[in-house]
Length: 248
Image (cartoon, rainbow, N blue to C red; front, side):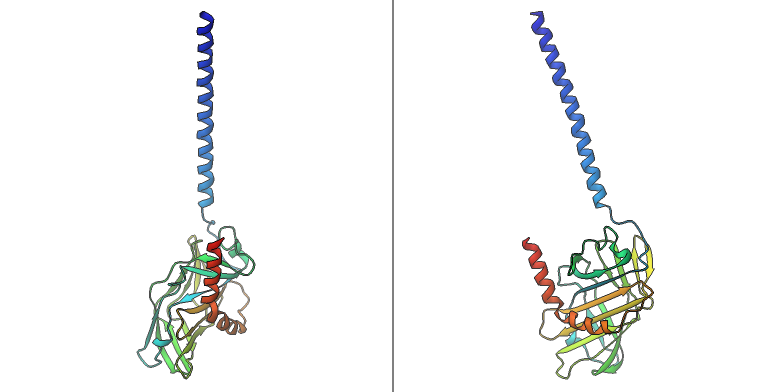
């Protein structure tokens, strides 16, 4: 009888000891998983973005029917409003490829979340339908979810034209003066900017393309032509890529 009591007491002690050890291990494992989750959610550290560039395309609300290049005219539109808040980054260099920023971009372009802008207003400056100039009435922010934001400053002037039928129009600038990136509270001035918008009447949305550089090398003029071609087809390309991604 004594033997049975001792055996039961010993078994009870072993079970309690094992249970305590398992509980400690489970707590430690949970803590470790939580720590890993927290670490993975931490955005890239604040860094200067000097010495690199990003090229991306996206969608903008139709604007061709709003253009009337006469004194007092304004064009109101919203960037990334219909594209589910995404932009297609075709290339990134230098510090923009830092882990947590644009490092995951696959060959051929990666889709990155970007906040829709509020209403963006372009105000008439001069010219007529064959060669007009508008300017941004306020700062235009492209805020990516990865903490990178490009600010194109108020007063930036855009040139453009509209075809005789009034069914296709463009706005473009190669002036990055005053524009800047911010990341983690660190500001980096843009040294060169190529920003093109294109709209074809009857489409669901218009397209835009941006190359914003922080290098000492100027953006080549031909990019304006490339931007025009890319901007005109961006809606179709983005929908196809997003549809494919949703099926994977």
